Image (cartoon, rainbow, N blue to C red; front, side, top):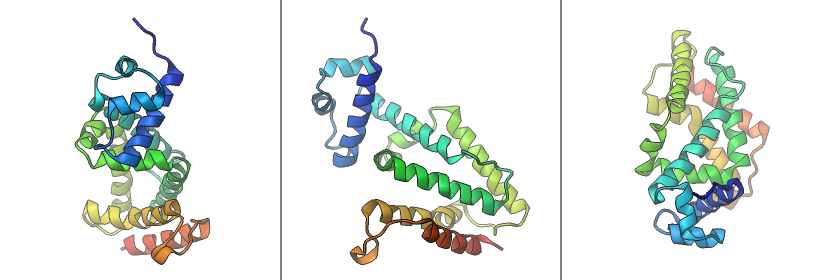
Length: 198
């Protein structure tokens, strides 16, 4: 039995993310991935059962890294404004440090693999519970207005992700050059808090 090579595995993960971000699922194949990694297709099957298994395992790894970074220095017991600001900082930091991983996760999140990945470990349900507790506390303390989850998410995180998309593209509306700064992020955050308050 052949032994797993950690460096080779990292190379496979990096190339799989690159290919899926660049070409989507349609342009992705195990043969193409093996060629990019300069390994045999058979070597891929040491690490993964098939293409779906590969996508789901890499997706779960990226998701766990993202969720873990999101709750750094965060507690659901924090005031809503403090907790949401930490969420914004953590989400922005991860997106700026790992733009390809974020783009990859956005692609798979909206695919049949998305739910499988999010249901694959209790860590995802733990993350959901932490966030639910945070929002429930904010509602109980009358720090935010009651609204549907989708409306809440759009108002609470939509402005941040719009700014991060501008930053990743390097331009905002009409092609104007753009770099996300703390000042712009804080400006959008204050408007978001104002919109969510009762």
